Image (cartoon, rainbow, N blue to C red; front, side, top):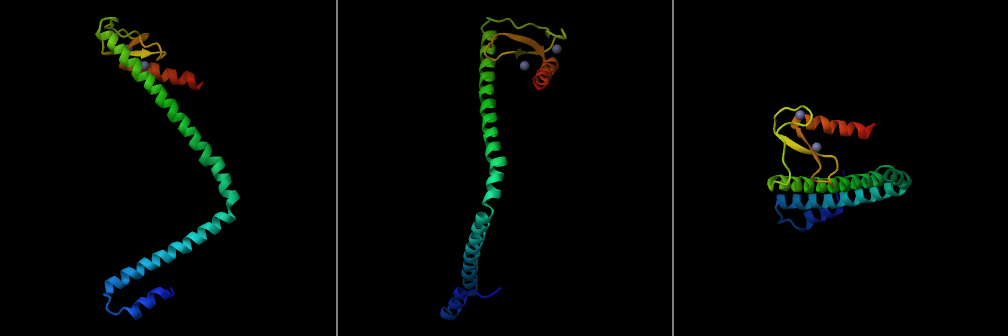
Length: 147
Ligand SMILES: [Zn+2]
Ligand SMILES: [Zn+2]
């Protein structure tokens, strides 16, 4: 590693500098120098590999980011509808507009039931299911959507 000209001039001109200050300055200069060198190198590399980088972004970056945004948007929208539907349903049960059964629609066991929505827009149209049947129902839902 060559001594940087800036560093040697600091040493020779300011002898009153404490060692720590000198080394701190030197390392700062070295970092600056190094950064400049890196920037130049990176710019050169980018210029030479423009096509490759562009291809990469086209295939991965942009499309994936778009997909991700779309999925997130869908999820948020779906979740908002879900939350709203559950809120409406809970309110209807509380006010007596809907009577919650005591037995699960599928297994007929007397358990703590939750409403399963087929369509979140129809908040009050639900199947009352126990937690295990509810899980099965959702898995089935996923399966039919995948197949
Ligand atoms: Zn459900
Ligand atoms: Zn059940």
